[in-house]
Image 1 (cartoon, rainbow, N blue to C red):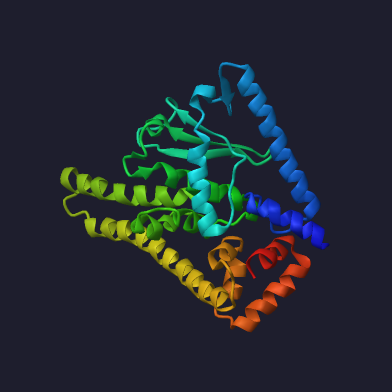
Image 2: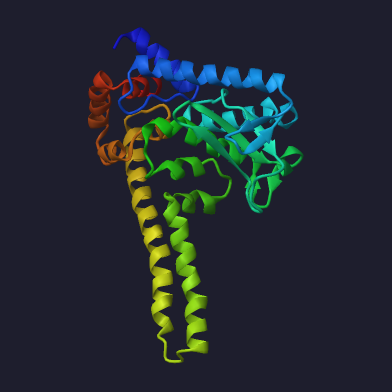
Length: 293
């Protein structure tokens, strides 16, 4: 790849279009143009119609647009942590169509490249709702939008939750990687009242302790998996920082879990050797080398 291609990819990367695992500069340019094109169409539709139905579910209008300066706050957070600022994703406040405790999210169509932020209407006048912070929610979702082409779930929530002001959320956030993780905790917790009911009404001799063990095992497994992944992050961070990376967290943010484990424990010379080697064949690593080493 040429220096001009790498320079173009660097600009895309800084705007939140991180190159995918095997994405070429041509594919990256096509993805960026496709995303901008569909966002322009959406903006035109929004300007010409009183309401637009998003994903056949959510009705939004120009009155619901999140102010650009609020999105700038979130972009500032992600730039400080990971070296990118997303400005192509619009945001809206929603009054209907969310759950009781829902705070916000980003919904997107990976095929078309179209995505939007959605925040509970309570955030229109307040920075906080329940335990949610407005800028934290936006920055969290920006992280997901930037990493989506890596198709990597093991540390997806880890990096997104580093935008949180809560140490507890930063630590526990990556426990829930898959949808089944949350369901597993809920189901294991429901075993306790069910087992107590069975013992009280039908089987006084029912061994309730078995259900207590099952209820403890699944959350414990999630905590162990979280501790294991955090262990590899710490080792790789130390290795990348020792090698002189300008922004070690930005480097790790752009790595797959396999690459992160490959870097862990390496001496500085070995890290630099890996970066040089990977940057010859990978546009993503060429960007990492150019921006952060």
